[in-house]
Image (tube, rainbow, N blue to C red; front, top):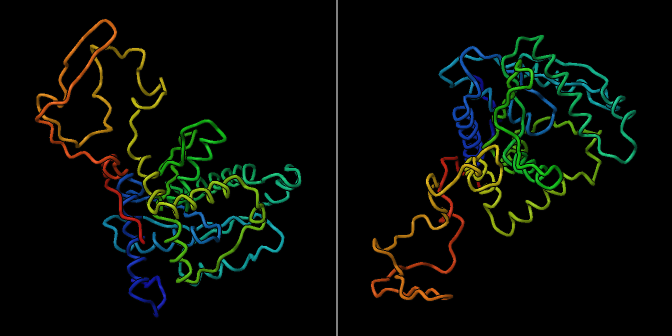
Amino acid sequence: MTQHYPDDVSGNFLKLRNGLISATGKAIGDYNMIEEGDIVLVCMSGGKDSHALLMILLALQERAPIDFKLIAMNLDQKQPGFPADVLPAYLAKLGVEYRIVEADTYSIVKEKIPEGKTTCSLCSRLRRGIIYRTATELGATKIALGHHRDDIVETLFLNLFFGAKLKAMPPKLGTNDGRHVVIRPLTYCAEKDIASYARSMQFPIIPCDLCGSQENLQRQKVKDMLNAWEREQPGRVNNIFRALTNVEPSHLADTTLFDFKGLSSNNARPEDTLFDGVELPADGALTLEHVEANRIEFVRKNVWNLDFPEARTPETLMPETQLPEVQA
């Protein structure tokens, strides 16, 4: 069994690493991301997230009750100054099967996108097509991407603010042509934990020079907003993510997800769950006292002894979902 971490590590590091492995394993299990005999193409950008993804999958591969194969892939987009020798040397030393795919998407993006405009949209579409074609050539049954919990929450707000859609990144996605399945095993992992893990692992990080200098990216603005919220109320980002796993279509407004037109008093659903968990007297807390032409009065019963706090926390208003705790 290979030890995929440095020799000189602290107990805190091992706790962090084990937490990330556990969260990744749970996500894989919850969404059935990897199955017996799968060939998983692990997309390596050279950033902290994809490095962590590969290392955690290697650890899970050793202890999983099923057999699956990992192939690391890096796309050399021919960006000026790209250190093309870094990842091949690192992956070879690690003993991982890998492919370096060369495609000059850089010149296409620079040609098509005006100076000063964000390049991510076109760049990502070009990368996606190359990744899908490579997966077909290698017979890969799954394509693993390094997106984590924070990426998913940020995408939710980007689609909300700029696309008028209640949509995020799914943990598992079938492509439009049905030929590929994309998985995001780090779905339950917080970015700050991945960053801490990557620093301790001293991964050979390769920055994206094509878009890394674009300071006005909307995603960065959303990230800054979420970080400010998290400082104000720790745990808020995790609560937002948990909300994505706890959706009630009848309490939204999409007529394709819920039959509002067909809803009547004869088939009404359960009432609003805002006050779930509050015990009320079986015969009611208030009684109807007077009914007049333009006035109706309810009065409080003497049996009323409900201890109801003036302000309830989000934790008491929203049932817990079975997701791993985020590392502190």
